[in-house]
Image (tube, rainbow, N blue to C red; front, side, top):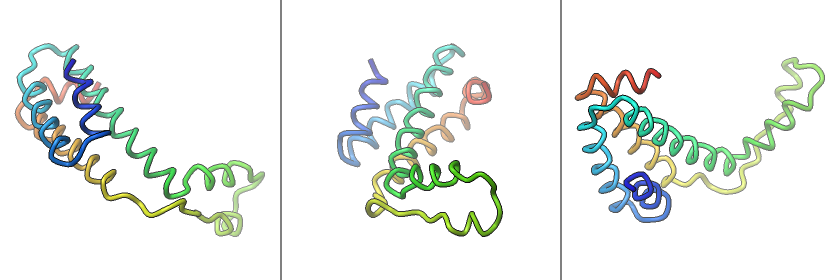
Length: 122
């Protein structure tokens, strides 16, 4: 299945493989004439963006800061100023490049397919 190929290449392989897989997936999505299939493809792509966003968030310490935020009984400016992010490590540029690549692919598909625009809206 093509979604498995994209998933594996974008998560596990290098930049060239990820870029090639995104190109193939873009061509497939651009040629789709079935709204259901496009909707499935779009959900899959948004799921990949969520995956990389979550990874970046964990590296930046977002879950720990969110727990501190939710543990507060009252929220005032001083309480918010006390909550700090404690990054676990440097943010990987790979995650950002992958998200940018997926978003660019979705943009390109929507530019050539009105059906893709409908799938994105749904």
